[in-house]
Length: 309
Ligand code: FAD
Picture 1 (spheres, protein in one colour):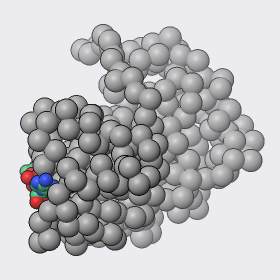
Picture 2 (cartoon, rainbow, N blue to C red):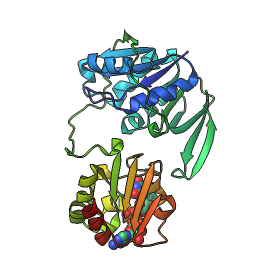
Picture 3 (cartoon, rainbow, N blue to C red):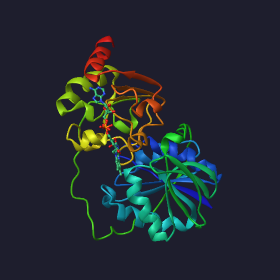
Picture 4 (spheres, rainbow, N blue to C red):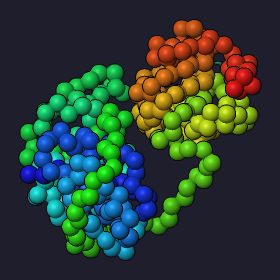
């Protein structure tokens, strides 16, 4: 039996999390295939084939896959599912959309956001916003799971796997792609940034995000993140939310500014290599997670830090 990875991509480049899923997939010690579904697959298939540990690349090429819906992708995956004991992807908005649907169609459980693969059907997952680690065992014949990318090193390049062509089922009816809108930013994408500067409710306004936080982020070539309280208050856009119901980040450096460190926020950033917290309350929860803590008023400390940098 084999392991199948569903590759996330933007039509031209594989998401860097695919290489991490390839490393996770090695744990089963069975051949690992990567599924590329797109309107133009040549470049994407070449990138997947180059990843060490990949046995073969399944290529599904069709105009209908230019903006594939989760329903369409799930139907495609199900056509090959009988060949696989394990179907997985890195945990993301993309895979959270597709893989539970695959699991439902196969009538098996969905194992979401796996942190550690203990053996071929036993996994460690976070529950209660990551405060408790649960070891769970699945008895399903097909294991369908997403893995936390930051827990697995990226597979290196240097491979030359072969490809197989798949036939593409007709697009599912009931939902269709209409349009997409991107927030264009000069900054690195939040999920992949090496440095993240995040602001909380204490910033008090969108202007403070632009005038206090952004100059610090500029100096560090950092992405900007936000707590949910800051997003709900309209200080920062929704796609910058870090946490359980936002983006999960694991940068080299995470600077939390005016963020209390609620468990739902910590869930999204506690795998960061170095955490710096600036908060005027010495009892703030964030200091329990932080490697470096500064008890200070952010409106004084952040401009000073920016000037010093
Ligand atoms: P606060 O908790 O109000 O903290 C503000 C902090 O700023 C305080 O610690 C204060 O001491 C400090 N401060 C105030 N003024 C200054 C100053 N001048 N200088 C320095 N420090 C100052 N939250 C998320 O972030 N992400 C999520 O994904 C998320 N998902 C959730 C899901 C659910 C189901 C629920 C129930 C909640 C979720 N939350 C999430 C909300 C979470 O519980 C907290 O309410 C939120 O994270 C608080 O945001 P905050 O730290 O910015 O605000």
